[in-house]
Image (cartoon, rainbow, N blue to C red; front, top):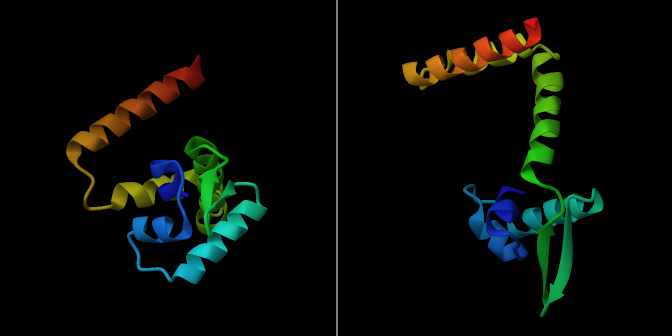
Amino acid sequence: MAVLWRDGSGTVSEVSEGLEADIAYSTVLTMLRTLETKGHVRHVQEGKAFRYFPETAPEEEGGTALDRLLSKIYQGSRELLVTRLLADEDVSTDELHRIRELLDNRIEELER
């Protein structure tokens, strides 16, 4: 989906080339067909190939993906998820300060 969102559309070959991982053409085709069955993409005939288009916006899918991650990996605990994210050694002090500010703002909103 990230390739389709970034590029606006793509054939199986274009999507495959746009992926960072080396994934077989047949695997990309299967993933696109599955996404189409679920209503996330659509296709149009373009010569001998199909051109796939995203039917959902990234912000729509981001929430559901995060919800699945939270539910399946972190047993619904936002605290465990945030703890894992903050434990990453690559998190800079500046980023931690921005996160703290976001948390402070959210706490203020909830306490009103």
